[in-house]
Image 1 (cartoon, rainbow, N blue to C red):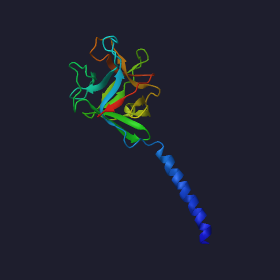
Image 2 (spheres, one colour; image 1 turned 135 degrees about the vertical axis):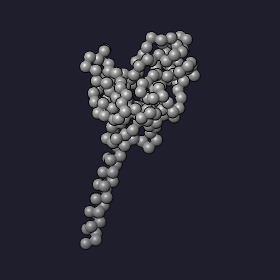
Image 3 (tube, rainbow, N blue to C red; image 1 turned 120 degrees about the vertical axis):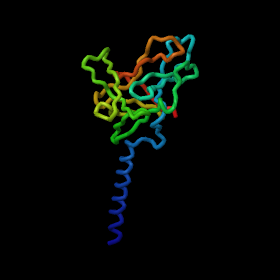
Image 4 (cartoon, rainbow, N blue to C red; image 1 turned 135 degrees about the horizontal axis):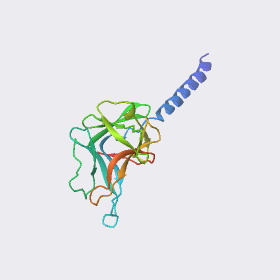
Length: 187
């Protein structure tokens, strides 16, 4: 009788192990950075004078109620990132649902404008999480990721280029648009 039970137990253990492996497929890597300066790569508006792409980060004011784009690179003039003012945290609520929260506890959200300009939507800053502040995180490579609005699927968080002279960041606003842009956290 004992020998008949062993193959059954082996099959059950094997199925349990397969089930556990499938559960881990949607989990993020243990070393995933989810807090720090929220950065992306911009493009300087004068490629001859500044041939390297610039690293820019999304900052906020002391109260956290508004944002601005700061230059993280060595050419930054007057717009340095500082702690804790410019720190953001990506908080998961499970099932690849994420909130982006700044140092003051404000949630970055999708602003649903009935008349978008150039198929772009603005961001909003809210005191509490809501359906418009949920993002889907898609991995790029290593620590890079895309943030898609769960409220309005197919629209991704991006920075929009501005017509400014270097060495200032060549991006001026944060929007939602159908094209993707990679973000990452600098510790």
